[in-house]
Image (cartoon, rainbow, N blue to C red; front, side):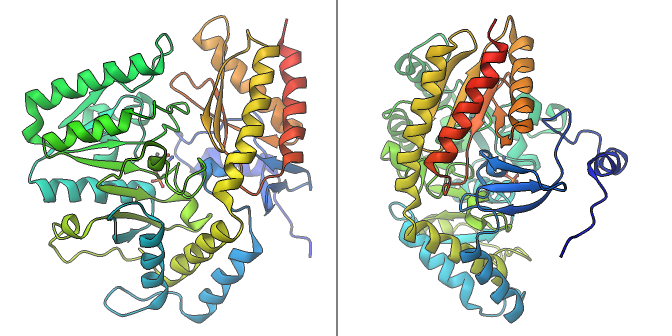
Length: 427
Ligand code: PMP
């Protein structure tokens, strides 16, 4: 049955009229998406796009994946919502499954509804456990849109500085374009040590993305987080891993902290856990969980529909071996992007990331030129049927975070088209 749509221009104009003016879009001419099926989305005219962004890592198992939606719908028709004062099975089954896939002694899960809310809970928990108020965060990190989570966010474009909590020490991230990863890690660690020496006993936690997403796909050296954890332990400071973008197989491991052999004290998770249905959580050990000593519950957190969906997601990730798939397909995509870098060294200056969380940094005559080129490439790719993302402090990094069910043919097809688009700009 064909639905009637009001058309792209009409949607754009309503959005302009009724949304807040700050609402972002990447495109001069944004498509109106009306349908999705696995790695594809479709506009109102039936044009298909292969999705290499997946709503920033959200739709990791594919759009409207029937293996998952059937279980969402079943639960929706069975029992939709209660509160945590009653017993329901989906949320306890989900907490049990999370315990099985989480590293170390992380066992207790508190369900909420968004990434920001998960980090907010994690930060408050760290304050209550340590009895301290301060935080340490990495420059160029992104942790959310609530007051506390924005306060620990390092990317200026995501902060409303004047109104934030200022008990936060930012230290350099373990990446610098002019340094090796080892040198950048040392500088970051030296800075961390100085902050800890000066005021370690006032700091509750350090919050980090294991691999910075919006900051431009920044993966530190293997040793970096081990050294960070050891330093923090000396001062009784907790480590919070924000796995909101990296979690659930995207980087080739269930959680990205496993690349560094580090077990954080608290993990926050969201996005891919619901494959598009809002579900999020922060998880910790038995001991730390005791510190949240007020009756506390989120109205929608862990509701039966979200929990049943997340259980279906975890089954699908396990049954389809999606972390392994991320490794294999990620290697193919990264090799292809590196080949394009070799062909267009003045346009692509770096290719980085791991698994299916990859970035290609573009250059221009100056920073503005690089950002403008990125927008032009995104627009041209969209016109030719490929959706990719962008991030980075200069908004000049092409972001590839496709559903993990993407195929080798999709990757090769996208690389061919990206080659043509870059050729148009190579003069
Ligand atoms: N942390 C990270 C690493 C994120 O990428 C995001 C969202 N882009 C958030 C937190 C905030 O999540 P949400 O938008 O669900 O509140």
